[in-house]
Length: 335
Image 1 (spheres, helix red, strand yellow):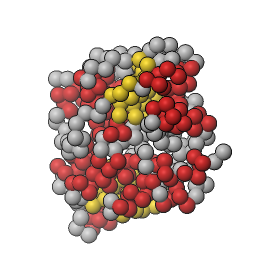
Image 2: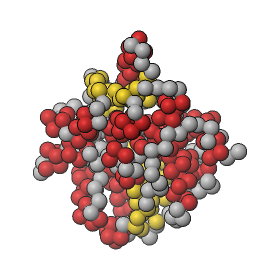
Image 3: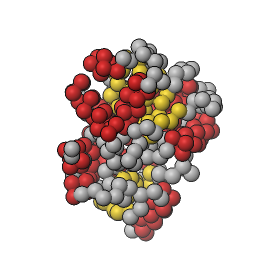
Image 4: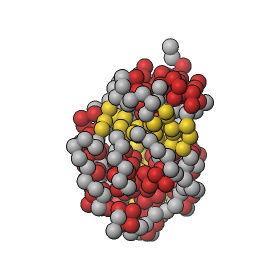
C-alpha cells in the first residue's frame, strides 16, 4: 500500500472546497530571473484561509470521530492556526478555546486587538493567555489542564497539541497537498515553503517523495535557526515514515534557510519588508509579516545568489496568514 492509501485510514473532516490554484507570477519572475509559480493556499477559503485549514482536516476528523464538543489549541497572539481552528470549530458546531502565547515581546495595542485576535473574537472563541513564548511542553500542558477542567464539567474536549511528542496529524494535509500539486500538472525544479511548526514543510516534502518527485524543497525558517529547524523537520518526517510508510529521507532532503529570520519570530526585518513590497507592487498579492513574507524573502535570496539557478521553475507555497497584516500596521508604516 502507498502512503496515500494509508491516509484513508485516518478520519478527515473535509474543510476545503477543492484544489487551490497555481498561478504564474510573470512580473515577479522577470524581476528575479526565475519562473515563479504560486500555490494559492491563501485561498483555502474557510475563516480567511491559509495552510492551517489543510492541517486541521485530520485533527478535526479525529476530534469528531471521538465525539468531541470542544476544540482547544495553542499559538502565538496572532496565530493563524488558532483563528483557523476557531473557524473550523464554528463550521462543525464545536466550541473553541484558543490559548495565545506571548512569543513576540514589545508589541503595541494593535497587535493584541486587531488581525487574528479580532477574528478569534468574532468566531466566538474563548481566549486564554499563556505567558511564555518558547515553552511548547508548558503550553501543551496548560491546554491539557484546561481540557481536564472541561471534562469535570461534562464536556468532551479535544486538544490540538504543539509539541513533537504527538502523532503529526497536521502534516497529513500537506502530504495530500503534494499529491494535489502533482496532479495539477505543474512542473517545477524546486519549491519554497515556510517552516515554523514544521508540519507543512515536512508533509509537503514527504508527499512529493511518496510520488517519486525528487526536487529540492527549501524550508524558510520563521521561528528557529536553520540547524534547529532541520532537526525538527527530520523528526516529523520520521514520524510520517512510521504513520504512513513514507519513503525515508536522505541527509540532503531537508533544506532549511534562516537568512530572513532576523530579528526573530513575528518581527519584521529588511528582507521581509522588501518581500512584502515586491509581491504587492509586482503582482497585487499580499504576504504576511510572520510567515509568507519571510518565505518569499528566502526565495528572493536564493534566486539572487544563484542557489536557485536562473531560469528555474520555482513553486512558492503561499500559506496565507493575511489577517496578521492588520495587526502589524504600526510596524509596516514605520520608516
